[in-house]
Amino acid sequence: MKTVLITGSTSGIGLGIATEFAKTKQYQIVFNGLETNGLEIANHIGKQYGVEVMFSNANMLKPEELRKMVDEAVAKFGKIDVLINNAGIQHVSPIEDFPDEKWNAIIGINLTSAFYLTKAVWKGMKERKFGRVINIASAHGLVASEFKSAYIASKHGIVGFTKTIALEGAPFGITANAICPGYVKTPLVEKQIADQAKAHQMSEADVVNKVMLYKQAVKEFVSVEELGQLAVFLASDIAKTLTGTALPVDGGWNAQ
Image (cartoon, rainbow, N blue to C red; front, side, top):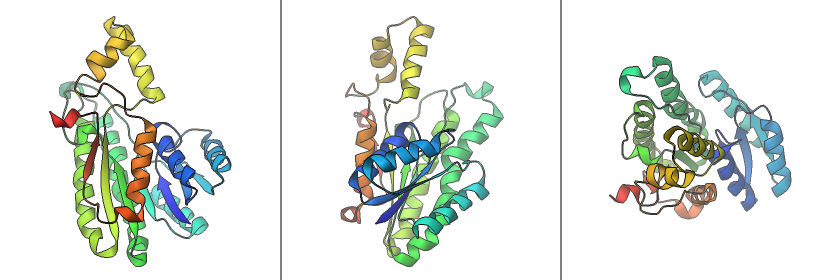
C-alpha cells in the first residue's frame, strides 16, 4: 500500500484528486485543508472507498506545521510515496493596487509551501528509490493574463521548481511533474460565474463562453475527475520515465 499526501484536499480540485486516488484502493491518503470539518470529509472518503486516511489542518504559510504534518504521516503510515502540492489562492488586482500582503500570501501558499513539503519528503523518497511529486500549477504557469501578477509568478515558479527537482530526483527513481489546468468547475468557480454575471450584467452562459473560456478552443470546463485520473497516472509505476513536464489540461488554450 502506498501513501499519498495532498495539500488543499478537503475541497475543490484537491478533493477531486483525493477521491480518484481513493477509488484505486491502492493508497493511504493524507488529507489537508483549513475546512473546520476536514476530518469529517477525510473520514467520509476513507469509509466510502475502504481506504485508510488521516487529516491535518497544517497551514501552508507555517513551515513548522508542514514538517509536523509530514512527520505525523510517516509515523502513521510509514512513508510518503506521492506528494501532491495542490493548495493555492488567487487575487486579482492591477499591479499598482496589488496589496503587499496578498503577494506574500500567494507566493507563500502557491509556491514556497511546495518547497518546504518537497524538502521534507525528499530524504525518504531517495532512500526508497521511489517518489512522485505532482504539482498543480495552472495554464497560467505557461501563459500570462493581466491583473494576476502574484498568481502567475507563483505558477511559473512552480513549473520551474518542478523541472529542477525532476533533474535532482531522476537518479533516485523520483519523478516530478506539473499539471496545468484551465478553468476547473468547482464551487468556487461557480460562485465567480454568478458574481461576474451580476457585475457585468451578462448571462451566466455569456460569462462562461465570452470571459472564462474565451481563450480555450474546447469550450468546456476541466473536470476534477480528469485532473485526478491524470495525477493517478503520474503516480503510477508506468509513468516512471515521464518527468520534468508541465502538462496543459486546458482545452487547447496553450495551442494558440
